[in-house]
Length: 292
Image (tube, rainbow, N blue to C red; front, side, top):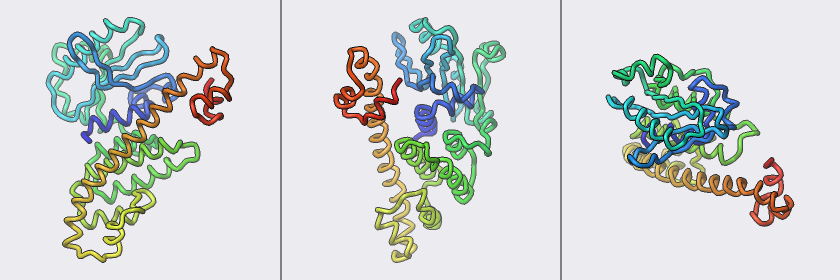
């Protein structure tokens, strides 16, 4: 998973992470959904946009850059202008270029006045991420951006798990973030050494290897270290594939459930009771009752 795709995934699951980085109140996240948008006519695609549920709130058009792109400011401006022409219902639009670090920003050139006015905001993740934060999305971004050893990252993983284990965290959200955490580790530290794999095995409460016989054999040292080193490399690739499949399945289930929940107000307008709606949509009654 490339870094920009990873971050877009975090923002899609956790809009409050993006809003917090932009300096907005995280409570506004209930009004925003993060989407990828196809802009017609010129075949532009906006990879990230925070769309509000009210025209009075600003649309945020977002580009993430982890490599040098001298035309990034031109691109976000072009995308935004076409988007605005097709979506006139929004009163305000904020353009944001989120760089991994300041050295990737080669300047806005002729569009510098737009930066100075705040119409385009460059943000540097390496500078704005706070190591004391307990926002799950920001903790993952910090792991992605910060150069660090596996040992120090495992300490961050412990803190991450503590936040994730709060009773109010839904299972699907917990699974989503654990999958992303493992993907971050595999991509950042690949290929895993034998010693690094052992360190992850010792944190089995975070990295769930309970059904992996090979991992247990390595943990018990029943496989020779020189063989285990090669197996660890192959395992890292296999784990990444498995986690990607699990993540896709979880996201598909959540999308399907969200669509069902979105149908509830319309069904109520037709005079159906909560009990009838729950039976028709095959949803728990409490889920139907939770929708205002």
